[in-house]
Length: 240
Image (cartoon, rainbow, N blue to C red; front, side):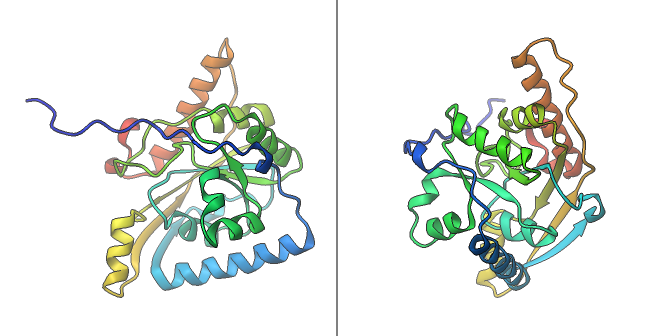
């Protein structure tokens, strides 16, 4: 039988080019206060809108350097994951959000590393590497966008590159139940959406492949398989 499913659109490429905005945010006293405030706000939003069941929190290292990799299902991923962490990580965010009213300013105050998607954004990678060299904790979604299928899409090589170059351990964290239609559907009925969060064990990439391209491919596969191993079969997608 022919496959009636429409083809999945290609990964997005940022049309905006703002390299002047890409930097590792300085952890000023004002920014640290704002991050603590933001952590509290996300906890409240999570409590109000979500019912999160968490597993494996004991696997979270107490400090960096650390590269956290996550799957990406919807808007609720952040309020599901961040309140479960004992710290506020640095995060990579798509540059398009910078111009969003209110949200873009809040994200800039928090201090995200702005990223141009679908392009070789060396400034963003350099900023993330500098952060890991300082012992910071960086969070990244290797899929590069919300999954359009509800399951894992192909990962990009940015996370593997950061793990290889920095030598930082990789911590996989997955969520299920954060799809927009599920979360907003429950909110319309004045219910909290059930969400499951699972934290895997940290690991490091060994980089034994002969060439750089092969190493990035193998490293990306290892990262995505680590995420898939924490997910139910229906969410594993390409990595079933």
